[in-house]
Length: 64
Image 1 (cartoon, one colour):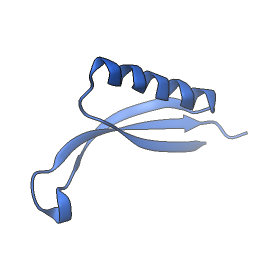
Image 2: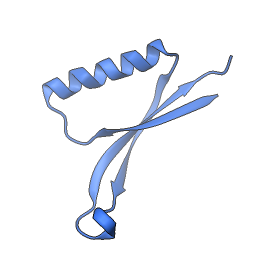
Image 3: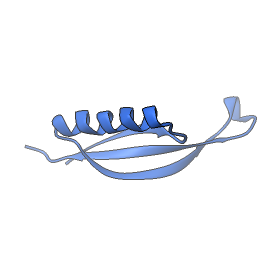
């Protein structure tokens, strides 16, 4: 099994949701299915400042 992880952001407009759906569809055409989405906190620049919240999408692809 292969996994791919990518950041998908944290705020979505209608246009963003359409683009996200297209991204999921494109990955599915390449054999990667959406497995899960989880929230992470990324530290500020050089560890200073406010951390930002984003979401990561995890995709999986069966070997073979």
